[in-house]
Length: 367
Image 1 (cartoon, rainbow, N blue to C red):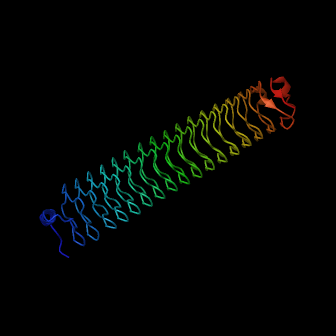
Image 2: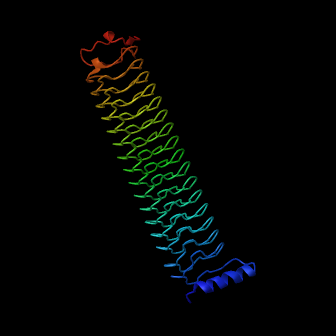
């Protein structure tokens, strides 16, 4: 196979266009060839050897590069709009600021690649390996990332609004400041991911694993997190108003200073959770488990805690005004005498600490 020079490629390109034919470079050897800023739009490059080629600033819109080996290739500032790169090897490639709008990269290997500032709007990245990839500042809104692998990937400040990320692997990924509002993260792996200050409002996180993740200062208003694993997650200062956490595992989670007003956390497990100064006004907390939780100065005004387990929890200066405590278990609760219980409702099934008299607190009995 003869290795083509830049001039030879240029002659073939001009000849093909003069004949009105699609540029066909299948099976050619372009290893190490200087193709910088060249217009190869619509080229068929399947089976072409491109390792070591220089493609910086090249135009490859609608080009066919399926399963091509482009490992370590320099493609910065290139245009690959609508290109077919499914199954291609782009590991370690320089794709900074590349335009991959609506391109097909499904099943491709992009591990360790530099995609900082890239345009991936509407790009198909389903099943793609993006482990350790730098995606800082990339535009990923509307991208398809279902079942993609993004272990330890850098996604700081990335735009992923409405992205399809179901069952994606984001283990240990860096996503601080990213926009994931309305994203589909159903069943995603976000174990120990950095999600600080992330916008996840209205996102679907059902069944996702966020064990040990950092969600401090995150926006999770109206997020769907039912059945999610949130063990040891940091939610300090996060906004979770109207969030759904039905049956979620929040064992040991830190929700200090977070806002969960009107959230639904029925059957959620908050064993040993930190809820100091957390706002849970009008939240639905029926049958939730707060055993051993720290609720010091928490605001539970109007919360529905029917059937909740509050054994051994710290209720020091907690506000339970107007809360529903029917069938709640407060046995061995610490500092309950210092909590505000005015207009809280209880009945004969409510279990109080030994020696505690709810009639002296302003609580209302509905026996």
